[in-house]
Amino acid sequence: MPAPLSVIAAARRSNVPAENIRRAIERAGAKGAVAPAASLFEAYAAGGCSLVISVLSDNQNRAVAEVKNVVNNKFGKGGAKMAEPGSVTYLYERRGRVAMPAGGGWDEDGMLEAA
Image (cartoon, rainbow, N blue to C red):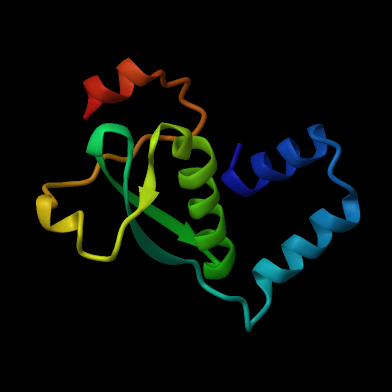
């Protein structure tokens, strides 16, 4: 099943109202539609573990809010906090990219082995 059709089917299974699905399709196909943009966030988790978080979103304000929410509320209990730009990325060098097909039934070990 092509990706757009599978997303629509998943939305219907989740009882998303048909009007919401229709509006989302119209927004995506509109001439003035906003193209998704990538953002890079840096954080420190418990024990000083550094995190580089890459996000692709059509709404940067929402992406920033969601990443901060996850870091502060989910990881924050262990001492995680957002870091200043450049304070984590200087530790790393980009070597490649691993892309996994959606819905492949990947578990954590399988993803690490594929990488």
